[in-house]
Length: 68
Image 1: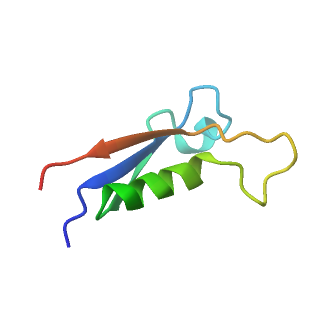
Image 2 (image 1 turned 90 degrees about the vertical axis):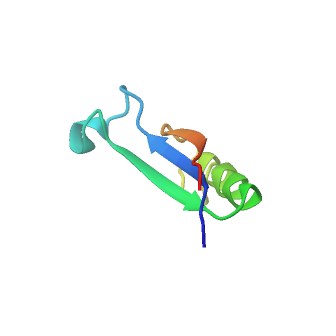
Image 3 (image 1 turned 30 degrees about the vertical axis):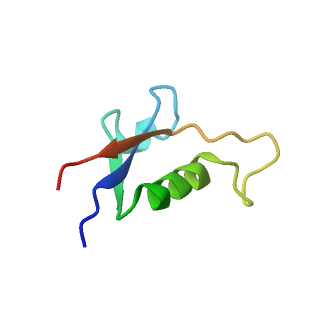
């Protein structure tokens, strides 16, 4: 099944995880439909149940597409 719709996840240079993962760390997640990708993107960028009060996600989430 082609998965042309993706999300690229990167870290801000000020994120403390850069010390562990490196400044060039990134991860891509791929989905079959734009709607599936957009739903996952909204979930990734939101505050999660396990977050402490006041925590804000710092990763950068970028919607991407590739030609199939």
